[in-house]
Length: 62
Image 1 (cartoon, rainbow, N blue to C red):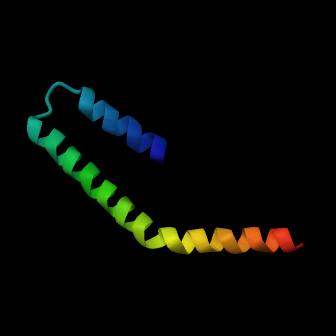
Image 2 (cartoon, rainbow, N blue to C red; image 1 turned 90 degrees about the vertical axis):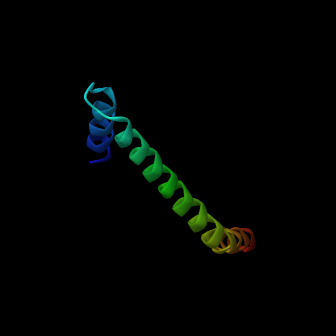
């Protein structure tokens, strides 16, 4: 599914009839996805870190 999406996206970039607006839309979409990922990492980072610390502590004590 992801492979199909990427190949379709690349095919659209290679076609000659695309307008500049479409490229801007893809850029905005990519920026939005990047912002969502960064926000998720900021909020979930400490939680995931604590989980790994607990696992590491439990492995050391056994």
